Length: 248
Ligand code: PGA
Image (tube, rainbow, N blue to C red; front, side):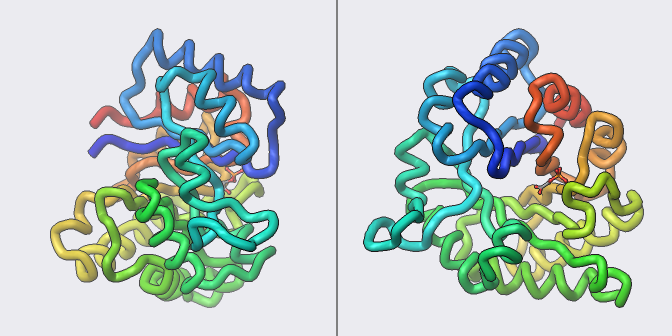
């Protein structure tokens, strides 16, 4: 399975930072990657980024509204992301769940919106530190998976991102054995839910992935790529992570 290396810029970046995407485009054009590459910049940058990267890699949003249009001041629909040049959208990131009280049901509605617009939905799940200490990591992830991924999911346009909340932006990561345990559990859940279709779904790991730890993490069983925050902001760092992905 070809891995997916996705960058999540969060609320970082102005037009001045398009130079990082231009650098990424030049580097990837000169040395085609062994993995699929996606950058999810702030929504304001998707259209200018699309013009700047000449299709060398894919672009995505970081959230979308469940409706296609309407009186929802400040929100952005999946159709708008698609129109701006996105082909994917991150959904249910722990920062959205925490700061905007997004529920599993809300994430599932957004996933349906993504598929309606023809986008790939990257659905994020993951336990807090307290939940891990209490031995609940697997059950929390399973519950979020069942609640956030609709039964009638469009499997060709779905990826799961396991992002332990305590590993995001902290420089701390689970052990490889812990990542293998959770990814294996997610795989079993996907197989029991979607049958053979669940075998081909990419399960990304996210949380403090950097050029130093990417190669080891990307070789853990059932890891199908990475969702990278801080280390995706600079082309030089992100390129090292892309290069660390094992060839399909
Ligand atoms: P991080 O963020 O790589 O900066 O830990 C990952 C994420 O939140 O997607």
